[in-house]
Image (cartoon, rainbow, N blue to C red; front, side):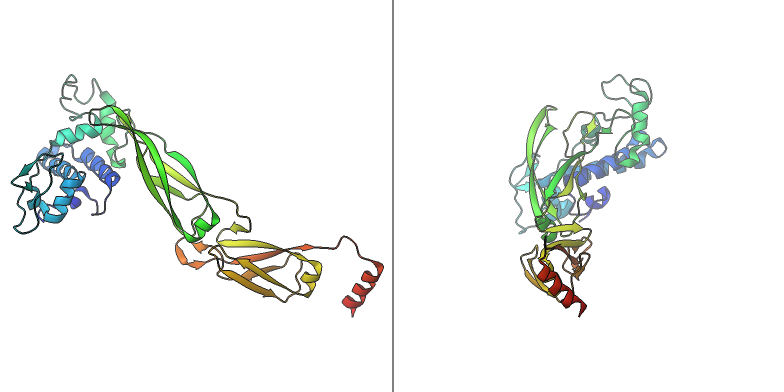
Length: 338
């Protein structure tokens, strides 16, 4: 395949848009030539490779050509009989029915991310500030702190606090697992630099056994603002109360109402599980107010091992008679003391 853009950007082949942005931001800050004055030639070459890799992988059309035909495909050298011939796209680089990749300027890509193309140098038309001066410590600190994925302690690259939102799930959802789709509406900066509102559907895969407080993070899905890294959107699992079961860690607690006679003579519990199965549990022991019947493996799935489950713990609410006749009392005494 020649040049391995995935390796250059340090991402795997399933990397999504957010993964590519994070990888580019981190590597571009590290290898910008103005930050590497002692090995500027190596930095320039690496910086150019990083930018080219991002340019290809962040564009669905270029990435599709690269994945199928490699670097040769991007240069328009599609093997004969390979089904080459692509529809025209935004890149505009086509020749003879095949795709031809025209790489964008590394400085242009960097400028799109950070609002400036030369952090220590000429700063374009911004007055030739170098190091300190017009932008002073902000520019320097942005680069000194670039190891954290592009966030800055200055005011050049700040990231807003995470936006947290509750995601209420039923106990059945958390038992079986499900997918919930959420509609997001957020502000983004378009290609002309103007804010516009877009809507997006995100799918959240709820795994069996997840607990209240579990967090699902969608990186940088907050509103876009110039000079700011969009905040992360975080969904926090909450649990809707169930009318039959109460959760205790990985265990389920079920409380059964019974009479005193049933507590003394035996009782059969019949219930429907969260996944719709009917359980019949005979209890032959004398049921005291503190008695608890434990049914192993009928609780909630373990989050890290969904094939294993906690226990079902059955508790009893015993209804005592409000009064007994003299005859009943005498009969009970005889029965219990014999």
